[in-house]
Image (cartoon, rainbow, N blue to C red; front, side, top):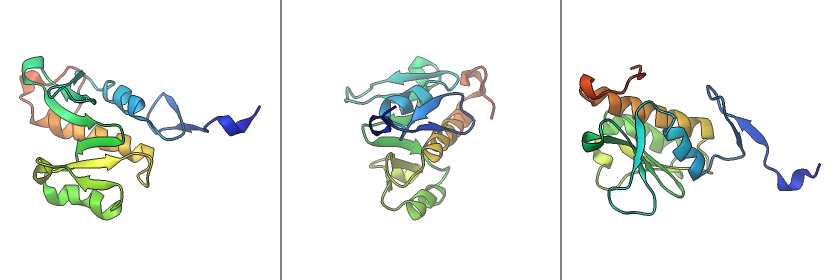
Length: 143
């Protein structure tokens, strides 16, 4: 078989799915939707959606899905989120407008390993869901 046209398969930890090569934006979107109660929204009619959790009228964003990466709640505080900037200065940046609240943009296809991108989505989801009122937390969520 000609290996020149095929990306190697990558098994991401704690995932039952196989991804070929670097994770792409469709795979990040699909991964977000595996979270209990997650759904896509496009509140600003942009080219890329956001992933939310919670009831439709009160859903909270846990991931901003973009062509080049993902915006996530990277920490409960700006200081916690800054750890990403120190570790990956070329591929992590403070999100405009909401960065002061611990949100970062993480670029895919760079120095940040795919498994860390997915773990960042997991952490963002946990941080956001933990702030929802208990009555709005999705069944199957474990904090």
